[in-house]
Length: 242
Picture (tube, rainbow, N blue to C red):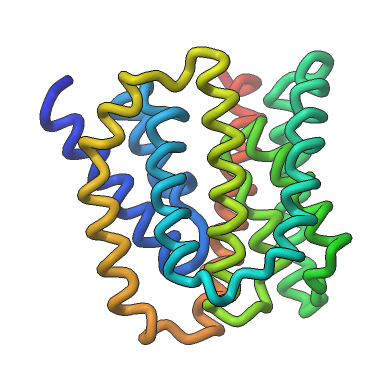
């Protein structure tokens, strides 16, 4: 493995971890496309492992603000969402499904801009987890549905509950990736070599979080959700444009 490749991937993941530690999610949105450009074999296995470590750190940092009741509903929804996505991909192309899900995320962002508040009830969190399973399986970006439901939460609570959800989500993904041969000791070795930069970026994010206003946080969250929706639509359209 070329040293410069490792450095570029480490910097991309550090940038993604900084964004996620301040906003609550976004590591994969920021880092995955850059990492894939330099080393495709790191996506999704190595990136997912770094995401797990980040989520564990963030969950510990905000452990007092985690709502296990709400997360339980999201966990329950995540599993069937993943299974349904796998079943749909037997009949519908990943690109077509990405188009639909990307459009759905953009519609949800538009509704949020109109000041329509989605309350984080057990039912809404279940369906957010379900939608996250669909998106995560087909586009590798599963954070937006959960982020949209939790967008009005206090900043610490938002980061805590998203982190708790991502711990579960990453573990589920790594088990699946290991079973299918997409996560091995090779991926783990390079993930551990890369980790110092993301951890340092996360520490720096904690140092400046107090400077970020709640309204800025919500705008950043909606911006990332919009960007993820556009990426999903682009993934769906790119084979047709080729």
